[in-house]
Length: 294
Ligand code: CA
Ligand code: ZN
Image (cartoon, rainbow, N blue to C red; front, side, top):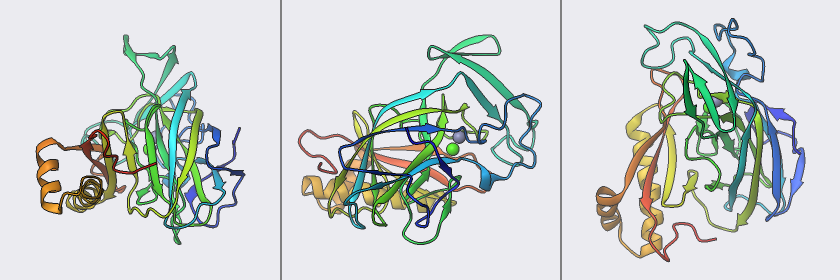
């Protein structure tokens, strides 16, 4: 079990484990508040965001080189018995009207109780990725290396593909949400500590710019920016390029296909917020035409 945490995706981080492609890894993760918020009278006022979202790792993957893809299949996401949801100062569309409040919910057998209502959980991973090439990125921020992607689809059965930028890739993950809606409106999901099991593999010499997510039905590119248009252009371009390579279509036909059968969904967009929004542009799976082979 891998347990030690870091607060940035950073090429200077010391690996805490060395893995071979094909290996299954188990990470113990802290919640996004480093497990420090345990009572409802603890508020996020003054919380240092650069100390948020600890990620467990990193793991050095043998043979991973820049230009490769590290694929990460999510076998299992198990959350603890306590979930925390909080408002954050000046974050989210209701920030000017809502109070700063902390709510702690008990979780059991995949369910929780919210204001007397029995509701389902759907655990997912908020922070997951590999090292950027040079400059460190705090774990609370998303980028082309992954990081705080905050997608409710990053859950068991999904597979992620990350662009390797440094030798060994340096995989790390954390920030589990027991449940989260698209957009993560108030800036937090149901934040939880837990245990994550993944199986990694390596695809040599296949450069991508942004993380790719494969679900049962779709291939998505996930891109982030403070500006919606820039994130949209980046994710659409990559999905269209991959689709063109898989099908032999030119860019215009891929553009048509995405316009007719594609999907644009929000990972995290709790604006106003200093953290870039993250969106995903997806193409439905076509039989025998994987957007990334392997
Ligand atoms: Ca997050
Ligand atoms: Zn979180």
